Image 1 (cartoon, rainbow, N blue to C red):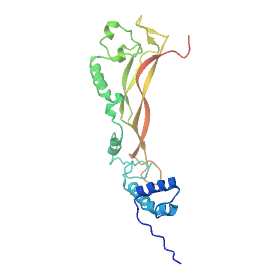
Image 2 (tube, rainbow, N blue to C red; image 1 turned 120 degrees about the vertical axis):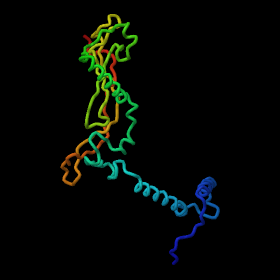
Image 3 (cartoon, rainbow, N blue to C red; image 1 turned 90 degrees about the horizontal axis):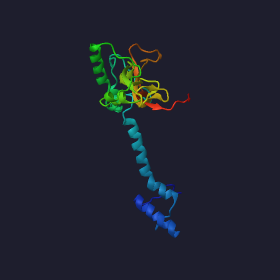
Length: 238
């Protein structure tokens, strides 16, 4: 008994599908070949094997996200590999361009203003200001808003970027456009922006699980950064 597999001529896949469609429409098989699963299997098998090989090859040779470790496992950096205050270069390359976001872009100007104010005297308080129309015309948005706010530099050594500009509302209520003074008819609330940052955490460089002194790993974290204030109706009507 001949157990060898039957030989089918190599027919382009497009031609196979077109002829198959015609055969089904006419209720007849391929000219010269029966439209069988066995026939289609031998026509499509080489292409399927090629796709599987390409997928496996890409999975093996693609660089991992965390710098040379298994998928989902952050790399543990020693103090010699990563000085304090630095973030891994390959993570920074994949991260968003922080310099284009408001919380990062404002830091340098806020620090410059802070240095000038230290030379002039103690900083002003955080009380709700009185809105003066003649002064508001030349002021910035956060100063002429009826829900004014100020910016401060938030510092976190275990976060990258370490410095971010945070907005702080100056009033519990909002400023009346008639009197220029605070009114409780409205409430001031902060507006937040989502920002992806890198969070530094201690890690272990051996199998004990005990954190290695000076060793750190980084995780991507989403935080809410206050970037301004606005006026809303109070939840409780007085």
